[in-house]
Image (cartoon, rainbow, N blue to C red; front, side, top):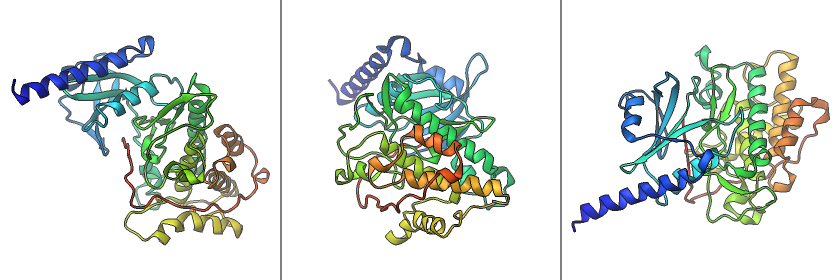
Length: 346
């Protein structure tokens, strides 16, 4: 038997195994589509929406006219574990702030996920360019505050609202999608981990996430155990970026520069300033942005036990500013020279 034939049979068997695992979820299993149907709904992948490290996303249309986003995995790790992981996680969810999985395809060594289409794309394009001349990239502070609250509600649901607790491990602006009314939805569950609700600490080999958003305990257990508080840290970094209008981490600069963004914001908070906030004019906007900063600084505390739960985060964001205290200055650190799993979608 030729090596090519053995390879094709192995690929076909692997596809069938993945499909069987997903369909075993019964009523939770999303609809299965053939690869030819995927090509048809995307018009042979003509309209590319974005690309990540291991996937490309295309605009598509179902037979009933419903617009969809089709995520095609270009490389699968661990014999499809990341693919099954994403389907297993998101199939258990039903929340207004979690993107809806409509179907999947798994054949010919091609794996694809069909999601609801989010016309405004990902959050990152609205927070990194607020000082540009492109007015369509600017969001009002009232909208940014609502987005931060809704993301927190989505995470609270993942941590407490599901029968199985879901830890996302890749919360970042690129994985927050916006619908036509700028309502956010958490997406990309390729790195998620399922655990029992009663479990406070989860066991995990290695490290997962995206540099700049990874909680200290995820890359070094010396900082504490890995838990839902690791998502809280990532969320805090995301909100800091929403306020500051820039990335908290840059691969092209030195260690000291990498740490300067949260440090600078903390220093300005200590001095009674709101942080570097573009477009803040009214007293209400100043109060809103300062509230977002204080909450995010609580979320990125080095010790996981010092971080609030997502339920508490919602309460803090919707409460009054005078009820919030300035948190201790967090000791910021990042994994250097370590391999990182990164799952990105647009």
